[in-house]
Image (cartoon, rainbow, N blue to C red):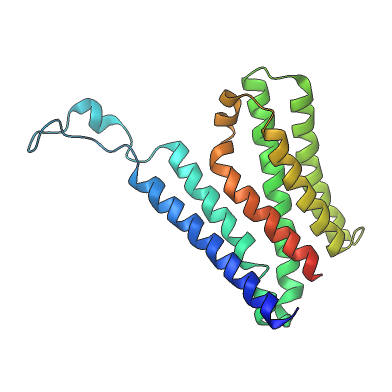
Amino acid sequence: PAPGSVRSMTTTMTTLVLLLLSQGAQAALHQRMPQRSRPGAEVSMQDASQPAVTARAASAALLRIGTVPFCLLPLLPLVSDDLRPICEPLLICHASVIIAFIGGLQQAAAIQHDLPPWIAVLAIGIALFGTTTTSAIATGLISTHLAFITLTVAYLLQLLIERTIPPTAKQSMLAAERQLPMIVASFSLAVGAALT
């Protein structure tokens, strides 16, 4: 790639990492903390029994951490071409595992919220797609370039599918928290496809 395009991709990826980190900090600031009813008052037992960090907030933080490889792995080969043979398979495997995990989340939400069967079937298909992509790249059945393209399409399709799911199920799937990470992953995989 030309030096200008490398600089542009680096700037874009850095901006995405900073955006994710700032969202994580913002979410941490908005956590439910025990509130005092008046200055100097003791925290009530009811407030003190609530966790300072919720499972949802912890999951959202882990989502952001899981997005960092999507930002860093495409950039490392630009620093040194010797890193390409390591970074490309790592990015593909990471993306495959994450899309399989998302398929599991979608299946659980479909069952929990009694959604139409096609959503559960599609969820299983997405999970199998993720694991199959990892196996196919590991055994040499598909090229790195094709793996990047198919995973990019899978992430974009998953974003579209989530638009059809009812709000209650979206909440179970952490769809709102995953939207930016999914876009970052799609962009990262598209960059991977462009560089291979």
